[in-house]
Amino acid sequence: MFGCSLKTVFCIGRGCVGCTDFINAAHSLLNSMRVTGLYFRTASSRVNDVCTSTTVTKELPKKWNVGRIYSAVVMVFLWLNAARMFSVFDRADKFGVVLLLKLSSIPAAALSTLLQTASFVACQTGNLDRVFRDARLQKPDAASCRRLAVTLTTVSWVLVATDFVFVLLTFIDEERLIFISTPIGVHVFASGALLVATKTLCALLMIVTNHILYFAYSVNYTLKS
Image: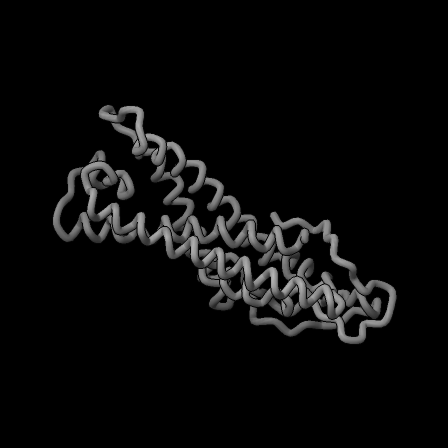
């Protein structure tokens, strides 16, 4: 999922005075990834220190911790949401903005689900944490990585905030944007509180989907920079 071909200069095979790992340098990004279960830490594991060529034990949370359970729940909802998006079309569809939105919603939901699933597997096996910890950065590189992580975190959260504008539009223009709650409202008639609750839940899933896309690619870009 995440690129490991890092261009940053690492302190492999020499003194590690003042160096830090990617987890500390990009903590703003990683903390934001926790919001949608895109990153969590597993049981204690032995991690190779690339700076000293020694093996140390990192005490991490227990295997069945809150982060892992939360990530698993999010993953299940995302798979259900991805399957749900295939029902957005109906016989009344005509070429236009709404149809293009429907077409784009399917690959977006599928890609987000695959990214979150890949991240879950990488976190569960400890491979993602190992990649982050093996990326040892010297002071100048760590400072640059930290600035980039903060910048991408800010931009990603701004994009997430703009998604709320679209969510508001779905409640204003219910007739054309009812597809967000598919199949409710599209193939299954609903009204009143049930429709509002369904649209709210589906809107939240859309925001989670976009959040995963923004932050998955942000951390990938930070690793490769």
